Image (cartoon, rainbow, N blue to C red; front, side, top):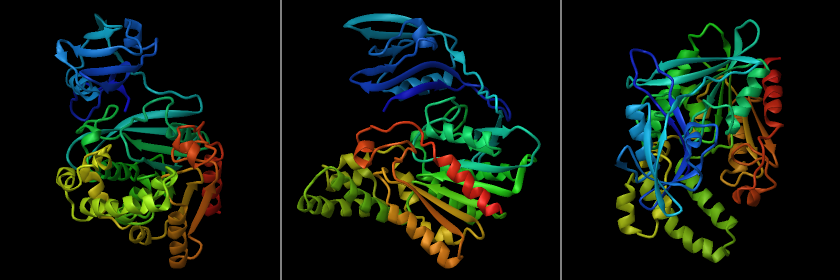
Length: 418
């Protein structure tokens, strides 16, 4: 996995100083990391580092993975960094001077940077897009999916396109950066569990309830992927009801059931015969049961099934998904009180089930008639981008952010306000 390098400086009091950047994306190779992206306008590229260079050490310390680089830089924030690189078989020394990351700006709305404290005392960066005009504004709290990323950027993720479009349409948007990402304090994002992730969103929602620019009667939780579970968790826990929950490209059954269905789906998409699929699923079910139900560690499971290491190439600490498995999505949705619900799926999304989205909607409408709606975008992938079909998305052939998504969300929000 390539990681775009952003560094964090030391904190004082309740402030989160701006991080610095050198502008590298890297991936691990033997005895170092290889540069996969070094734009010429960023410090590393300006200093002479190029794509394909292999970083062997930094300030005299060996570099084994990109995370070694990130952790060292997070702890020191040096004014200069001496990289030892290998290029075309030759060793070179390149001095890079980090620069502070500029704050985001947009002509159609205002960016407001603030901070929120989680229950363990760590500080997280919050980023608000405030529309033009006088508030209070209907407010969308963004709940992200699995993975380690920052939205403190002008481009790169579909979330950024979506939040910009929503803010331009008059919605205040609110985002809490993940642990250890962007300017945020906390343990490295890849080491967090699900409860650590939830702590940031819980603190964020509590802060939203105190903000004068927020229309407290129109707070909308907008979750994508795993955020589609986070939304109903927050709504079920909250003292004050939320206006609506939007869940995009998510799941509607307990995680153990989802893993089994998704494993079967991936085997089918890979072109295996039915007999081959059934043979593999027999063992797969046992592995998922040991992991999510019996809470065995990957090390314990691999002693029994040594060929299943591929099941545990995880973006977070393995306990993250074991904690997810303890939640029952439909129960949470049923306890979201009077919140209106919109579930959205893409026909080109190969990691979710359209039926599960309809399952949630049907059950909510049985419980509270007319409270839930389902929207399908046939050519949308899991990343909310345009794709021809599931196979194209699986092959990495997706295009731009889906232009029809935000207008459909806005139309639905206006309909429930009428």
